[in-house]
Amino acid sequence: MDEVKVIEIKQSVFKNNDERAERLRNELKEKGVFLLNLMSSPGSGKTTTLKATINALKDKLRIGVMEADIDSDVDAKKIAETGVKSIQLHTGGMCHLDADMTRQGIHSLNTDDVDLAILENVGNLVCPAEFDTGAVKNAMILSVPEGDDKPLKYPLMFSICDAVLINKIDVLPYFDFDIEKCKGYIYKRNPNAKVFTICAKSGEGIEEWADWLNNEVTKWIK
Image 1 (cartoon, rainbow, N blue to C red):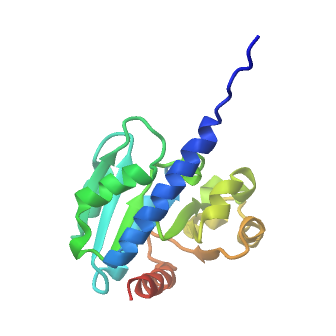
Image 2: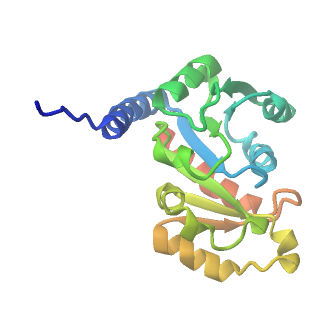
């Protein structure tokens, strides 16, 4: 019997995506646009955190937001309430965005008047971590009710994120969540990660996170 040719499709897909992501990142650098990829599981407070971040930065930076979801435009409408440019991206059932999908979003957003473009990725801790979107920085939100062991269960997500926001610290008294233990797990996956403890609802910790993000944007667009 003749030998069967085996093609490693997954490896090829990731390689092609990485090349396209790097190309998009370089194009954004030339235009002076900083792309942030924001990820989390559903219910972590991603949209609330994003609104608080926008309110802290919208007088300093021109901001545009791409809301990715399998369906609906609920989150895009919430973001539009802040006064910044906002569009909804429907993924057609896919649980992540890749570089080409992000490029389409960037084109539709029209970043000519944008310094900071934020991609609110589809809510889950697996698929979005596997695909480089072309973002300058990756950030993710971990809420207290999810548990402090998530960095152990989803290592890739925490290893690729430049910043981790531990949200809903106002409910710490009601959950068995050890912040220091969680930070230790995060640093085990990524020693260079910046960890911020926040309560998006009250605004606690948002200023420190926003200052870090503003500094990163400023360095990029110079």
